[in-house]
Length: 536
Image 1 (spheres, rainbow, N blue to C red):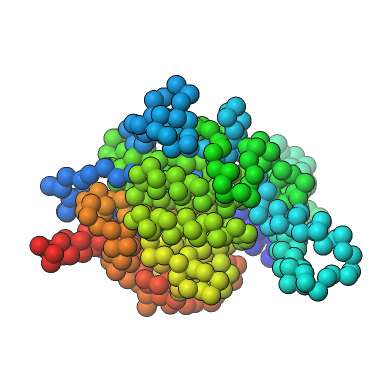
Image 2 (cartoon, rainbow, N blue to C red):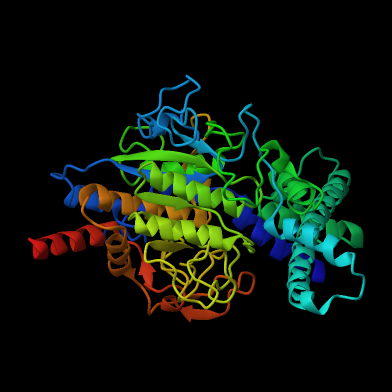
């Protein structure tokens, strides 16, 4: 019996994680729909355009996307990529004297002047573990009293590293075991039926057999077919887990030498190249498209805001970003005219948090709004932060221009918060659609994606729309308006996101974020109109 229960749980998660869009392609634009008009908990973008924006003349807004790269040539992002008009393309000269040569569409902090780029990187916990392990192993069991505090931190890092690596191996072995069971059961049944392929009807017609091996194979294959499981569907995820082992959790892997900078020195700031696409732009292209894909052009998807230019800043590898890169990326965005910055990334440790904190404050000082994805661990970030984190060590708020975003689904029921979404009454501001979001990917292609990484650009797009319509709004005011104008569902009972397998623990939605709701563009614009009338 245990084998069937374990298999059932794995296949449920397989269906959620790897089956792709399901019927969501029928709702490719669901995140822009309206709960009131369409019975879908989207953000009412289409309703706002239809009823409120007919006579509005928006101004262009620059939104910086700090990510892993964006396909700036995608058909559905045509005319939406920022161009640095102070720079002359291809002349090898820093025409605008900002320190970056030929930064026409943004900058890449993950490469060198020869055009070489980092793709895979280690996790921050791996980097810390590798450095600290060498230090403390040299002491043996005699840790100097002066370093006891650091040693405690090392033990914390060591525990996180070993726990993470073990989880990856367990998942990898579990998948391999499931594939093995599939292949064995498939072979037994095909031999028994003397067929090259089998269907659910074939299995049902077998009936009960005395041979225990055949009966077990039949039961297993029925489970597999009911969940439409095929081993090849897991190939991408197996490759991902292999990359996690080979790169993310490998302390001996160090690709930073490609860049050639000192990653611990913020003053060593002029490095990288102008290749903003990079070797793997799926994630960043998806993020950019949610914000800015050309609306109503009969191809692809509808972005949230048309009057926008995407400044592409590549600083997030396949692995964990480095604090120095993020701090410099934020400053680059601010210094080059971005009014909104989307940051769909995060990590468990931040050894140079002060560098990022200073950059967040710099953004606030220059009236730039930062939108950040809360993370996909299904954890309470009030208790377990994901960095960047808009609080200091004493839990004091750092800035008033940082929005942390959780992910919601299109189901207005107990499953409204996405099972993977991080949450926090104090540390998460709002929720936004983030599961089964239809996006652009490189090569003029499209794909359904999920994660708080998609919820963040939904909010960034909404913020950009408000800024384009009401240019005098400050970053702080936009945050306040988005928080106050949510579709409030705070008193609704929902499943706690991290209760993934049991899905039993229920909690009021207002316990998951400070606003108690999902952002609503229609409500936000109406609130802006009311505020402008009061001012005038």
